Length: 226
Image 1 (cartoon, rainbow, N blue to C red):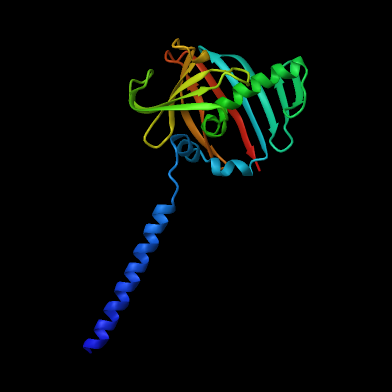
Image 2 (cartoon, rainbow, N blue to C red; image 1 turned 135 degrees about the horizontal axis):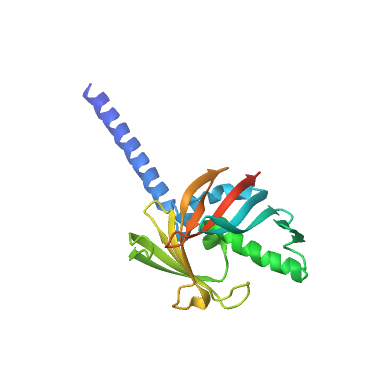
C-alpha cells in the first residue's frame, strides 16, 4: 500500500511539474504588444483582413447644422474608390495615377479614413515616431489618462511632419486627441471620441466633438463588408 501511494505521489508530482513547465513556456512565448498594437487589437484589427469593402459617410456639422458630407465606397482589394459629395461624384484608383480632381478626392479620403479607423492607422502607418506618457491630463475632459504622441516623418504623404497627441483609457479606448500641424506647439484641433459601435468585429467611435461641443464630426452609414 505504501509503495502504491508513493508511486501515485511521484506521478502527480511529475504531471504537476510538466504542466508548470508548459504554462511557463506559454507565458514566455506570449508576445508583448506595444501601446498602438493594444489599441488596434482592442478595436478589432484581427478582423480587418476579412473586410473587402468599406462604406461610410463623413460629415462635419456646426451648431446642429451639417456643413458638408462625403460618402465613400472603397474596395480594399482593387484600390477603387468612389466619392459622392453632391453635386460631385469622383471615381479613381488609389494604386494608379490621378488627375488633379482625383488627387483632391484622395486627400479627402486619407483624412476621412483616418477618422474612421485611427486605431489601425497608428499601428500600420510607416514613417512614424511614437512618444509615450502615462498619467497625462487630457485637455478636454481634464481626466488623467495615458497618452502617446505620434509624429509623421517629413517625407511623403499629404501632411508630412504632422503630429497627434492621443489620450486613451485603461481599456485602450481612445478618448481624445489633439492635432498639431508640422508638430508645432500650437493646437490645430482637438476632439473627443464618443458613441462607439462595433460593426463586423471592428469597434469605432462614430462621434467626435470639439471642446465647446459646437462642432461635430460624425461618421454614419458605416459598412464593413466581407
